Length: 366
Image 1 (spheres, rainbow, N blue to C red):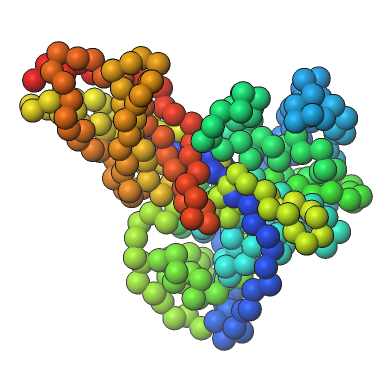
Image 2 (spheres, helix red, strand yellow; image 1 turned 90 degrees about the vertical axis):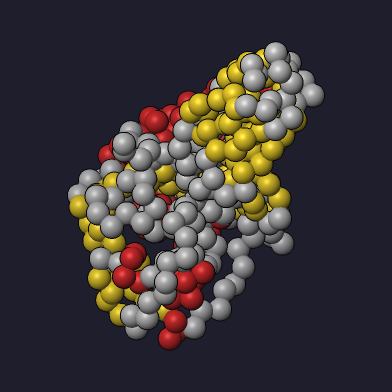
């Protein structure tokens, strides 16, 4: 069964914000390597119209108290940054770069206020856009506990330009979602001298530190097409799912002001999980099985209630991305329970959640 999304999609939704911080990089720890991707830049540029439609729509409803948002323009430098970031998130789906620094270190200094959305798993540009845009209703309604940072980035009145990129990874896909999409937002005057869209298979040179790769449980041999400089020390892979993680895409929805009063917001899309099966188990228990792992999630939360509106719902947690089932105990025989699940991501000590899955019910007969 083909893996599909995370944003990050997935479609997982996590939004993280971070303040760019200077990162000390040991030259002996730094390597460069080649990552081959098939760019989808013609399609990526089509997302601009969808973003601007969302901004016009937000103006008509004065969302966030603003009705004067201007259309965004594709900027040459931000597009180049987005193309490099698309290749980077195919190695580590996160708002951090491969040396552990913030994604914003790649943006031009003139970008002013900055934001990033990332997504994985959507094979078309419209599906990728909808991973982020799907947060709109939750944003409008002020739904608590749900990330809306991706949508807020799209309609942010402070942004004037954007770079958008998409790519497909045919081989050596360490994250496992094949399709990756990035939006890099900024303020200031755009440079519109764009090159022709690149839709070719391209060997992209990436820079990383071995220590940061090791912290992700990745080895040089795992991520590279070929190491082009630096040593080739390897590290044992610690886990199969370090998938999407933090960064503005790994996480997520709060904005932190920098000392210059700019807001640098990195967001990633966490997809809603779905329930594969609910099974009544002897002893007043119910086994909840999630259909598939959500990229970038740290785990899942289950809520269950005898009330269809989920009033007074109780909750249970699956603490690892790889844990896809849990048995709930203490249920009353003869009663029907309604169950939902959602994914979560830890960011700066806080839990950021996707939306809840479609509700399913089970009757406890034994």
